[in-house]
Image 1 (tube, rainbow, N blue to C red):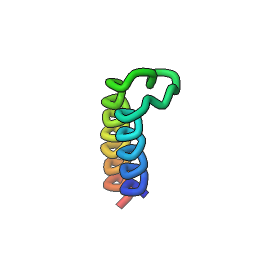
Image 2: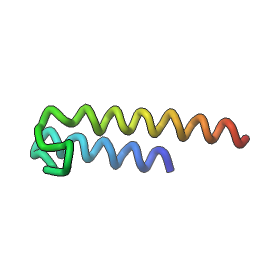
Image 3: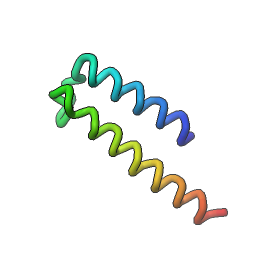
Image 4: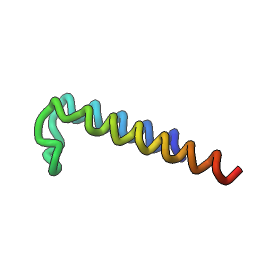
Length: 54
């Protein structure tokens, strides 16, 4: 599941660089870092939860 979400966020970041999505907080091309940072935070939380429940 985490791999699928990371691929999805990567695709969104690439689209954001090419043509801004226009979502709140993602109006400029330079806002693609927000998608990358969100994906990194999600990945860290997901790995932490997986490690916690094993």
